[in-house]
Image (cartoon, rainbow, N blue to C red):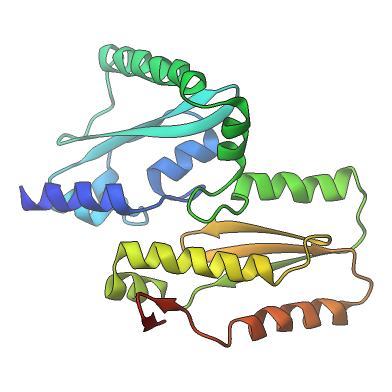
Length: 232
């Protein structure tokens, strides 16, 4: 039906972030998650479209290789139900086969990169960012750390206006400009979620330095972005 096709399209086009909706939650917790009443769980992305498509329940499972999550399998049902043992065992076998395929397809260096970076922007992902901040605190014993979060205003409206492909390009351009305008010797930057970035700034002595640092980022965005000869 049209509703199911729309649900499939949204699922394929949306880039789920760490902790977001069913795939993001499975990624974060690294375990099977079952949601028997997915279509009525309104805080979850896709629940409205799932309901229109007649999909009721959902569950997801991670594809794990060497303690790292490289993908998520999510499944939907037209009934409100908890998966029985037989389909779970079958899906577990599929997950195992996919996990075994990973080292055949990619080198160790590629796998390490995939597990630590956002594949769209090339920036650190949220889990890698948290690891770096934790290292600054526990190993380097850094005394001054500032966290700066950058949100894209009206992101949903932008996405709907220019489409997914141009929005992805815009995100890449924003990531590139941020990366070019921070000092790599005292900063880490990561993609936080679908419309936000996060920066860790350290090695400063005065709070005024953080204000100047943030102001520099603001100034870098006074100029717009050109996407297919259009200014955004």
